[in-house]
Amino acid sequence: MSNQSDEIYVITCSDKLVSMGMNRLRTATEGLSELHLSLDWPKATLVPVISEEKAQFNTGETRVVKIRQVKVPALAVVLQSFYGSNGMGHLFCIGSTEFKTVREDRIADRAMFQSRIKASVLPDDLLGQVIIVPGKP
Image (tube, rainbow, N blue to C red; front, top):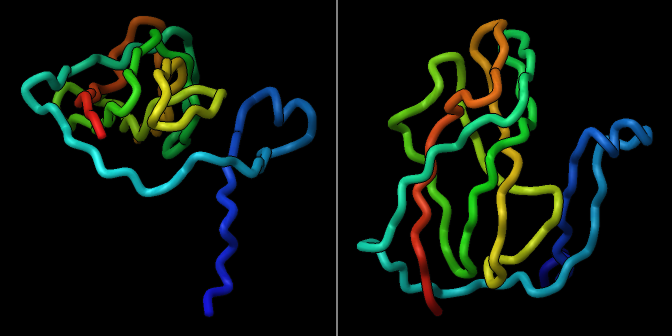
């Protein structure tokens, strides 16, 4: 017998929540389950992730940075490319403050970036690249 809950929770973090004295918001969600996909590799697209704002970093600091919008079609998978990155740090993920399932079209407008040095990301800086691979059930 399993002690695991059948519910799945989405965790949201944002500067707006911090300004309200909260470090995260935990919300039960529906529609998340195992999904078998057929990926269309010949239609994969390499997409640069570009900063839209200035963000100052301390050594080792990780922050969420506004980026140029990246469209992610329903059922597409987003993978990190390790080529064409930012020399001051590492791109960890892209997304948005609005949760959507993989079955929906999505638009990423935020990226999580960690700096190895004390420096600033500036508007139009390349943070890294992602590979978007279309899929179907």
